[in-house]
Image (cartoon, rainbow, N blue to C red; front, side, top):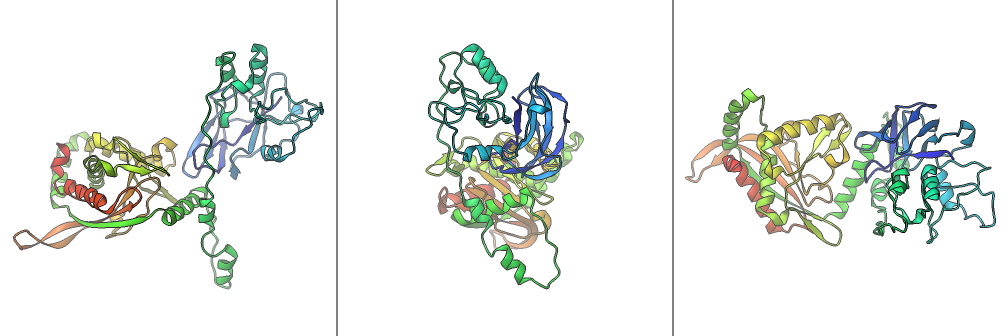
Length: 443
């Protein structure tokens, strides 16, 4: 029976994507692991690989199509001996339709099969094992069903490793008779907050009417901009932010940086002020370990290592790639890694694990001439450091002598559920101490 290939969820937050490019065409033979398409999510362009072998019988969604929902049918795969005549009419909403349809009567011998990863034909009887003992449907590829039948295995006892838990060939071949799948945790209820966040404020009709008669151009929101709007609106409404501000004197850092860059020049390494800021924050999270934590609903998670996210502006939005174990890495290693992540972020080539996670973030607008600003926390992070420009200012020394120095203004946005005022102040003091005494970061 033909197998429906569904739009995959390539990241935890993905709800829809753009089918950017097909690497196969109808009639091509594919094997498990072959790259079939490139899919643009709200964050990146990623390759989509085949999990079954067969022949591409039909491409349902043309390349370049935007707004393809997760689990929509994008293509149909034929197995050996099948032809295009077996496909029938494939709907991109077949899973939704089948899940909403009333269950067929047991006596109905001609009801078409409706399973995850399958096409439907009027002449094909339903497979015997389409539901488990609990009444839930079992999703498996036709080849997996056939092998299971030959081995005498009950599909209800096999845990699927394919897209969305579908049972594939490898799962059945590795299964042992009588083995029971591990009980999965109940999935968390899907939050309605992002949708509500998108709807915050006046409706589209009200806004359009307000500016009726004035010339304007409507700009369509892409997936990234929709996600940013939803997540940050939700964050600002649901996270109890408070803000801590400090001025940091950079004269010692600028002098030390100049010396290091001269010594590192033969290696082609040039350290930026941002590299020092990343290192200072990573070490501060070690010096104030209670602040190296995230909010997890009914608890907090406190981390041993410092995973620091850094905001990178790209066309139409931003990424926050994460430098893992930043406290353990040298300044030159952090510099090289940050350059690589920033370059691939701008090309939208980051993998999800490279921009997800971390407990702390940095947003630096100093290079744009911004003196100071307040950044919005990106949940589940507990804090984000907003970094302004280093500018020359008058400084009163310990001996009351007035001098001129380079001063950078920073603002620490803090989630009060995780970090209280005194703890946040200690964290910001540690960051300040590290930056004002940069040589200690190498100790």
